[in-house]
Image (cartoon, rainbow, N blue to C red):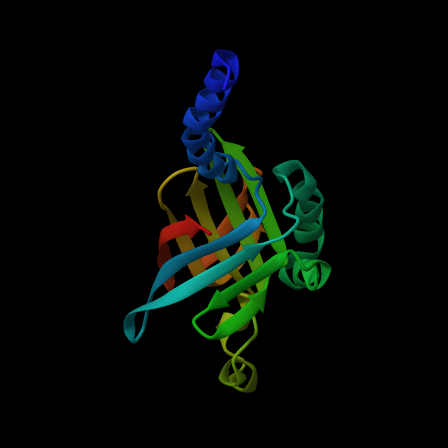
Length: 189
């Protein structure tokens, strides 16, 4: 074998581990779409419960694209926004054994991570509707989390929430009777 050919083969063999090691790094540089696993801890009247969460994000919006929905909320309120976003098919949220469609997903890059805000129109429990409970005024489930390029992220979950426009013009999330929680160990698949 000639010296030149031997050098080429050796350099190719030595470069192979470097290419193999760089492949996982390229996978982490994906866009905002993807699957995420996490654990949700939710505090409620019966105490704190932990459950597995799987989030599938498809076709998220930027913050600028979501601004049009702000006008719907400002002019028509909670139910107008719920009707406008229902069925947007932006992914799914599997909370325990129950799957919820994602109606709003906003994803914004920040450094080596993505920040997500998710809103889904929640299904009301039969007692809320039958008894006309005030929780009917909180028609959304809101989840916010960040997914770093490496490691695990965290966030918040509000199972019963209402959205409004604050006096300062910013979107405000109001949770129902202190039911809130946190997302922990958020990891991209």
